[in-house]
Image (cartoon, rainbow, N blue to C red; front, top):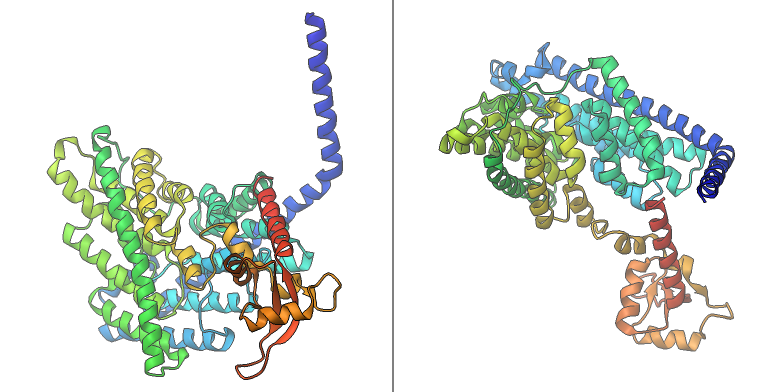
Amino acid sequence: MASRFVKEKLAAAGDDLGRALRVLRDRGPSQVQFWFIALAIGVAAGFGAVLFRWGIEGLQAWAYGTDDVDHLYSFALNMSWYWVLVIPIVGGLVVGQILHHFTPDGRVRSVADVIEGAALNDGRVERREGVASAFASLITLGTGGSSGREGPVVHLAAVISSWVSNKLHADGITGRDLLGCAVAAAVSASFNAPIAGALFALEVVLRHFAVHAFAPIVIASVAGTVINRLAFGDVTEFSLPVSSALAFYVELPAFLILGLLCGLIAAALMRSIFIGEDIASHLQQKFNVPRWLRPAIAGALLGGLAVFFPHIIGVGYETTSAALTGKLLLWQAVVYAMLKVVAVVITMAGRMGGGVFSPSLMVGALTGLAFGTIATSIFPEVSGTSALYALAGMGAVAAAVLGAPISTTLIVFELTGDWQTAIAVMVAVSMSTALGSRLVDRSFFLTQLERRNVHLAAGPQAYLLAMFRVAKLMRDKDDESCPSEEELWELVEQGVYVDGNATLETAMPLFERTGARFLPVVSLSGEDAPPELWGALMHVDALKAYNRALAATAAEEHS
């Protein structure tokens, strides 16, 4: 009996080994080839991120006349006020000209556009506009713009992967995988954070954790990290003064409350940016301001604010480090956080460029420090340091803004090198993300897309409808299977029809509302011109196309 059992197990093992060898023989070469492509993209995106960072530092050093851009705030305190005012204005003028000539709408491309490209455009993004946006953001950050470098770097990496995808004639799945590789490498090279870089690409951009995408994305992420360490050494972005020993199980309720506060702060930051954009667009239209002048006006407002509070200049890592090391007073933390929000709103509303990750780190660290200063003064005998609260607050606000609790938690650890405070950061991040995601459409990026009527926040069941044009699914009026023209014109006269240039996003609600078996497809030439009949969209054809897309999406996410 035992011998038969052993024989069965050996036979089963032999079958498994045979299947593995067949997979390696049939699929291995192409898979290994894809990994080498992922490695090449990782190296290219890593160099792009490093060069972008060097460009910012070089421009800051030239514009502000300092050799140590890591302490730009301290240097700006002693600069002549007129230089602090003028430099962002000049930067805004240059940015305005770049965006005016190289983008159709004068808008900087960023992470939201990469997410849209992954979901709706087979992993491709706009290349010409993307390169222009990278240069615009570099100038913005180099001349005092109050934003972050991660957004432009992510989009620049996506431009690289889009070029490769087009050269390879990659399908949607491959294009998205290559996009994820580029994004992971860019984030890793920007922050020396390989784990968080890989998870950011999966969690934020691809928005799934498919096994087939994991290996190439990790390879690219490691490549980006190697490029960073060759350029800057194996150092963390922020240095904590001492190991943050926790007092701590008694403190956990305080971190829960901090997480809820950070969720509110994150929502306020995001909503302030959107309100600022709406106000700026309204004023631009009302006073007929040229779009190339909008960034310069924002630069003037930033410069005026920086004359009195130069800590808002640039990425803000010096102030963030001061918060993490507890070197700021309570009133400074509160005032600086409020002014940073104002500065970010001005930068974003002025369409100057840059990302929101670094500003959210700074606002979060200041919020956590202010909260921790109060909490530790009330309960000093059971409290850790206020710097620990700054660290947790930094992760909590950033996670809620990005809608990325996993990768943000990890990136905070990798930015600081402190792995002993995991529970505190995780507790704060979980609460802030749970609250913040309900006050906006999941995250800053998805809310940006929702404001453009790109409905990714609700999932593929919502946005897939926008991928199918009615004209491609309709049956031509001369087709034998198409309903008669009399039936079609009868519905047209009742006002039940759909434009051939529309998508299923328009057609499916019309099917639901009317209960029709088919919809006439027309071409609308103008208000006075009669519609031209093209054919009919059958409800069953629309459902089949939609179901196939849902099945393909599910298959990709679970492969």
